[in-house]
Amino acid sequence: MAERTALLHRPVPPQRPKPGAVSLPLGLLKTARPRQWVKNVLVIAAPAAAGELFARHTLVQLALVFTLFTAAASAVYLINDARDAEADRAHPTKCRRPVAAGQVPVPVAYGAGGALAVLAPAAAFALCTPLTAALLAAYVGMQLAYCVSLKHVLVVDLTIVTTGFLMRAMIGGVALGIPLSRWFLITTGFGALFMVSAKRYSEAVQMADAAPEKLGATRALLTEYTTGYLRFVWQLAAGVAVLAYCLWAMEEGGTANGSLLPWRQLSMAAFILAVLRYAVFADRGTAGEPEDVVLRDRALAIIGLVWLAMYGLAVADW
Image 1 (cartoon, rainbow, N blue to C red):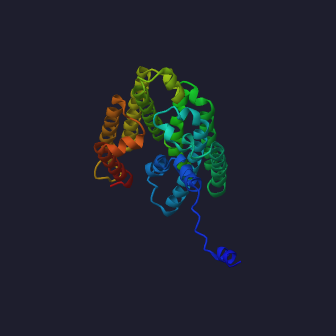
Image 2 (cartoon, rainbow, N blue to C red; image 1 turned 90 degrees about the horizontal axis):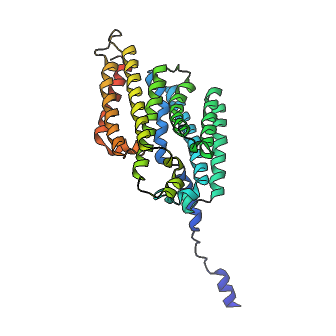
Image 3 (cartoon, rainbow, N blue to C red; image 1 turned 90 degrees about the vertical axis):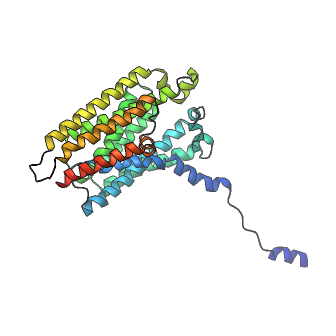
């Protein structure tokens, strides 16, 4: 009896959480691609171009739009990885993604992605404008269609990814009711196509020696695009983006408004240098994720900062 009483009063050691209980939330976060969230900073593009970035209401609204767009993009990543789990296991690097590696069960990824896909546009409708909610819903619908079938359609896949970047750049202006310049849209759209096609070109170059069946498993269209065609696309897109930016700067530039120097026109030099520098990596076949290219190349980062300074001075009329 005494032994039984002692056993009842013996302190119970704390139980360690199961590995899955800790790894699942981290896996979901990793699947949402935090490193990709930097792309959503494009939501400030339209207000910055219009010189309306630093008003208090603008900053609060843009922070909200950034959060909602990040949620929508994360929904697409979750659903995409759930659909592509088998194909990703055949890829040399994508096999480490949490869903492909088994850290996040496929049904959980689908559930989390579906919830975010519904909640992000609904929150935009309640907290922003109906047009903002419509644009966000269109982004989610377009990207999900891309995940299901459109990523297997030649040229359309490039268009969808490019349009996603363009929507990021548009939504900040839409949320704040800022008119979007045609030159802004052309420059942003073709600049995005330049980076997207350069990335595809780099993937094709890096996997040129892979077996055909492995190419088809990892990104099916790499077996149908030629490196020559993808090179043509990124060169064409770079040329149009530079031309559109120069026309924009020449139309809007000048010193008649009291600026000490024609900063917008001078910014053409920095913009062209940035495109030429990025093209070096595209030509080598090493232009993977745009944010990786910018962060690992100090010269490109410095050129980008110089361009930002010049454009900022142009907007501020200094």
